Length: 375
Image 1 (cartoon, helix red, strand yellow):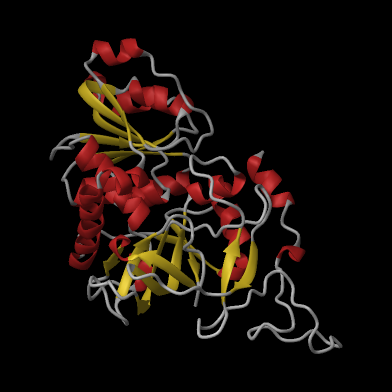
Image 2 (cartoon, helix red, strand yellow):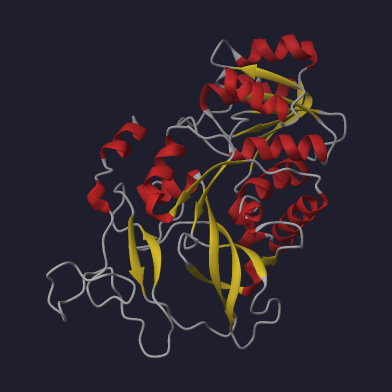
């Protein structure tokens, strides 16, 4: 229903054009010079650089507008980045609906992760320099041609890793590494069940569990097409939960022993069936609720098998335990450079098609990471 509602709010008129005084916009036919510019044309001020395009959430639950905005000066600890790619995450959609834990002041630009090239550094910046290729973790402001960000939330991209590939790493692989290593303490040879396994995070979990941690993966997906993909990406077994109960399907694969680790991004009944599939001293990590329902945990199931249920709020680590947060992103970049992980990009949209990209994610049309290209 949510996807259908968003789809009905996609009139072509959502793309707001700049006023005639904007340096990047052509004057409309017949428009006299000096006509007052529209809201989207914001004066940069003397010496502050060029205007740039950004996706803006002006009103919750409404399509985003692509508008020209004016830059501001960088502060001493900040860096201006020429953004090339920005990841699209379900959190971006939720925050634009006003349904996320964080509620930025309107209007705001979504986008939690991006890759690009450093344009300018503040006086106190020592970690990067102009021309460096970087990935950044922003607080919902990355979906723009330029982004100003604190130097500590930038990581240099090593040689051999493309800007496009690097943009897939922060959220999906950061989540996968924190969930599997830090929270679940996954050991070689253990069995990991991952739900919504064909999504960006699910595929990252398969990649890390199989190729970094040497665990065995059971991938749970909702279609035959996705079954083929997750097997190609390294899952040892696959379950199509659109064709029957998850618990019974997992039992056929591992017997009554159960699975050691569950990484769940779905919630609801899928979470409960996964919980009932756990082994003795198993660990289940709650990453999200893509199914739209938050399940209540039956505490007796935790007791009977000494199961541990835990949550993972990825971006919270940036504030609460930055060393671990930073280490996971550095590790993801290193693994990518070494060829030990293979990020999967499902679709790439131009900035003008940002609402189509959101709808693509809402309707679960894509496997892997969806990116916005700013170039």
